[in-house]
Image (cartoon, one colour):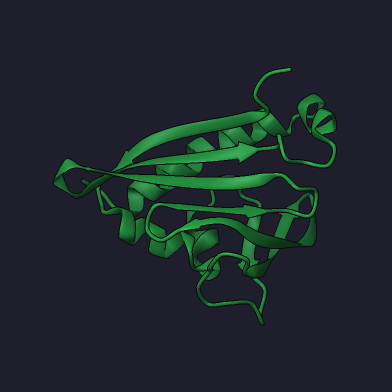
Length: 145
């Protein structure tokens, strides 16, 4: 059935700390989202994410909707992941490289989902892989070499 994950990696011309600053601020997520689905952070959530933090986002795939996320993995400056209501995760791993650059890996992981087979059979793994590629490209544009 496969690993139930899709990941993409890119080299970005800035430090992990600067990238992590964007990822840990939900208000910045629409700036880097390549899928076109992330609209805005909902009011009342944290300004900066930490382990266990809950944050809502306004989304749109055809119709507008709201989603609540929980931060389930957190290592300052290196790793952050949040889980949606169905249990699937969005994970970001940052590895420092020479010259102030960072290897950035974004992963859509549905191995932890309540209904992983349904996601496997849906178009979401392919669509999310495309969105990840575009997100990483946007991140690179924010920090040109």
